[in-house]
Length: 115
Image 1 (cartoon, rainbow, N blue to C red):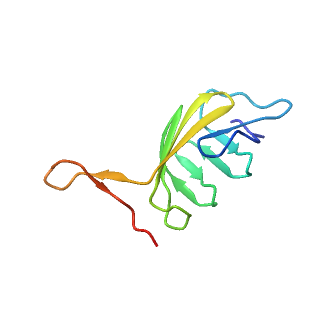
Image 2: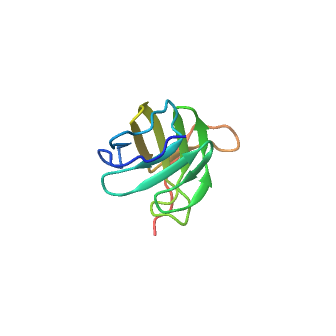
């Protein structure tokens, strides 16, 4: 598992690693951080969010998606990450989600509640 990952371009949209001898990987698993000091850690379907919540997400070797938990800032948003190369992950945040009603009707945008 990669470790020792440090500063990247910007937490949203890109996070990455740097250092004198970074660990190389072709999987999204590992410890990632931004130039602003925000950190995430991915191990299979488990993630530690930038706010420190330990949750489960949707994992594949090069992609990871999770919904921001209620305890974190921006709760309810969907965060999608994709591994670009051994040192870079692109991250996207979506404020709205699609909801398909129980009758299977057309998707309708639903906004998470704001406080």
